Each structure stands twice: as structure tokens, then as C-alpha cells.
Amino acid sequence: METITRPPLPPFTLETALIKVQAAQDAWNTKDPERVALAYTMDTEWRNRTEFINGREEVKAFLTRKWKKELHYKLKKELWGFQENRMAVTFQYEWQNHSGQWFRSYGNELWEFDENGLMRKRLASINDMEILERDRIL
Image (cartoon, rainbow, N blue to C red; front, side, top):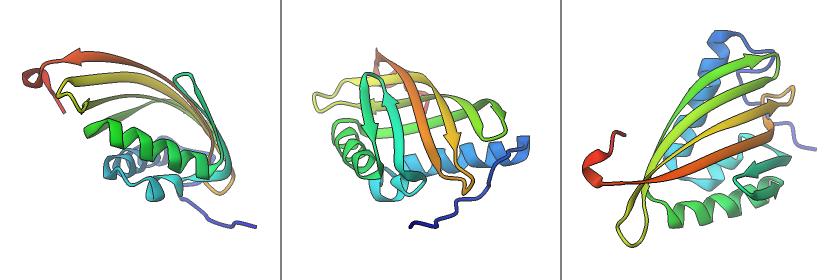
């Protein structure tokens, strides 16, 4: 049985919720699927756009595919709200496809954590907008 602990732990305060969001942003900006996946339970459940992902191994595979497609990825997350072991986060990220087109993706996530601070549920709604390179802000 896995016994990884990922502080800060729920129930969250404003201070610990902000730390958790920053840690997620920092990890995702590494674009390292192995590192990012360690923040999730072995049986984590995700909805990412229209894709349903179950378990840490599927998370790794998803993130590997994602960052092969989304080049020069840069992410910014903001805490929207929190209560006990749940958070709402808004985010934007910029990336470039293999044809050279830049995008800004906007979205919202709902997170639920277990008692060890691992995310067991992630529901993400995301929209992409084509942008010019000169319009990048991240």
C-alpha cells in the first residue's frame, strides 16, 4: 500500500491552499510527467476536456502526449476558492503547436484531495484561443 504524503494536507487554510496551488503550477511547468503524477493518488480520476483518465499511470501517459503536442508550454494557476479538502482553480497557459501556431488555453479545475494531500479527483474544463506570438503574456 502506498503511503506518500504531499503537504500541505487538508483541511486547507487560505495560506495552505495558496501553497498547494503554487506547488501544482511549479510542477506542471517542469513538463515532467513522472514528477507531476506523484501529486495524484494511484486511483485518481480525471476529466480533462472530453477525456476521462483513471489512475496515475494513465495520468503519466496523458501528460506525455500533452507535452509532445503543446510545445513551449507555460502555465499560470490561481486559487478561486477552497473548503476542507476541495479547491477551485482557474488557469491559463500558452503553448505552440508543431506548425508554429501559438495558443492561449483558459480553464477551470475542481480538485479533491485525500487525507495525505494527494489529489484523488481533477475535473478540468478548458478552451483554446489562437494568438499571435506578439500577444503572448506568459
